[in-house]
Length: 540
Image 1 (tube, rainbow, N blue to C red):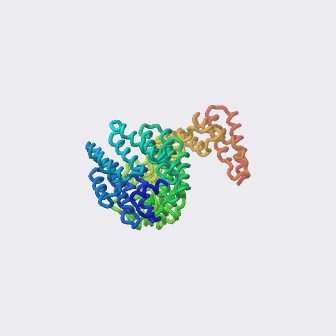
Image 2 (image 1 turned 120 degrees about the vertical axis):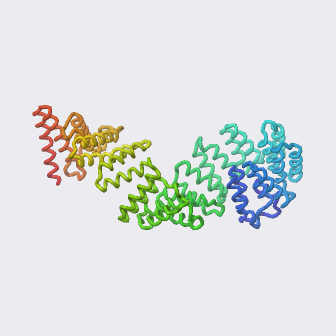
């Protein structure tokens, strides 16, 4: 396998399993995740079985990729000092010389590297990559010459050749051709993550399932690859497969070479999957080493709240909001959850104060406005509740039908509360009727929610000062159309019957015909109303 050939140049003895961290760092570098590579290479630098010269080369190469030439040179020089016979650090120094425009020095370094690694074709490809990174057009001839040499020497079986070719094609956005090259790399080194990960990254935005399948294949062959475990978890996460993402993150978190921030992501996924106890346990593990992790504290509060452990959730929320480092970072849900927990503790004043703090911090947040609307509704201040509910809708990007419906309750209650001022009462009812109409948009007449249709009729009636006009008449008939579409609604044996709505709808129709002077139709409607009233009485 190529991974053994890679290490043979700089390591005289076989590596034990404890060197996985060192190799994992190299894998992250090759996958283009340079910060992660730097973290793992530094973390494992002093392990007994780590090849320091090789680790220092990949640290330097990571800094080259990040544009920090000074830092890169420092590591390459240390690598040469650690093992002057390790060819890779000369490749790194040559790459820096090329970037500085010192082509002569670069060629000297590359010649030195090839002299030390006569049977290592990856060194040849790394030199080709250095030329490619410096200027793919200017050094096109050098690149092709080196790749031809590596092909001939390896009999076309050196995986890094195909990785570089794939990268060149990916840079040209030739995704299918790039994926084909990465598959060739896998063919000649089936347990190395690089080809699998690059294949998955190329294909994810085209056919996500292909990417996931390829990473699954990698872990079947190399189950301990931290990179492979993490990438598969990330692809599940990006694809919205949160349960699978959580399962895969669980396996990855057990790997010593996971990153602390990934454990925080794991907690989020556990919460999203409804595994609240596990989420809390993971949050506590993260907070034991990083007590100021904002996201993890939030997840812990939500998990405790969903478990209905309100006292613990309230204490966690108090701590969360008392942290000065978190100022200006809270979202609307942070405030509304905290307020709800105070309400559970029967501290309505504290609940209100939290929402007031929230609306000052986030003046147009729909969640906080809705929570304040509910707060005033409970206080029976229906007018203020309605106004706040309407403001929430105005600031909602795309209000749902349910959100439009919910606010109509406050407007209907406002109209009743304002009965001493008929004009104002009618105005609030009319506003509510507009929202009721929005709530009904998009529904088929036979499938509209009955409660939506009833409230629409009631608001239209209140808007016309309790006189049935044509709008109320039409609303009553729409309600009857919906009721007739479900025969069980007229069955007194059905505990979910809608007989009261039948009675009211026919009464409204009767009053409309009375107003029109049509006594015959009014009587027929009243007869229907009486019929359903009788059924309603028998149901009780």
